[in-house]
Image (cartoon, rainbow, N blue to C red; front, side, top):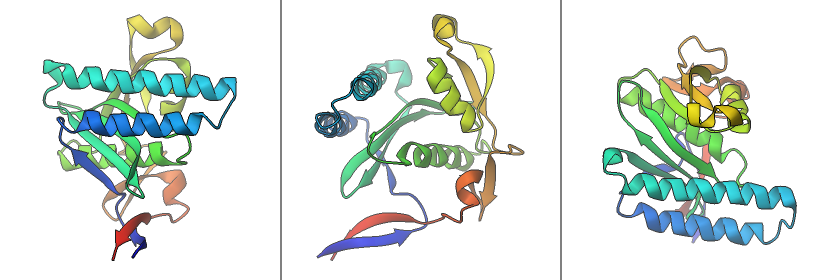
Length: 198
């Protein structure tokens, strides 16, 4: 018998790099099946972008320079609903992130996880990333990231280099020693649903 239980940390787990391509394949198939029911130009565009991110993830896995990067998956009912690759350094970098379009809040949960992963690495929750276009720059700005440098190859599309420091950031709160996006922390949402087998 299986059911749901509440946990205080999101059900995000690290996946070995060698196993991550299979997780990407499952995620791609699930998103494709979901997309078959959308039938809109906007939906097709969104699925195309997700496909590009998944291809970039596979490229990152093949890059010897990224060998120290870490792969993470957020699963619900055993299925991957968000994927992320993080790498270390002076400020940990969020290399790639994508979430299933039907899984509301999955991307946000992964960003919170990344900030707390950075904190666990002794980096106070700081992150950097490359935003590739104006839409993603807007998303990251809403998360409290700020532009700190140009990204020449993507400048025409509105891309840039961005960074986040949750300390003193009006969009972030420290709740019980963990960083949370303030808009969710203020709602008192501190538990996550996961499945259990019994």
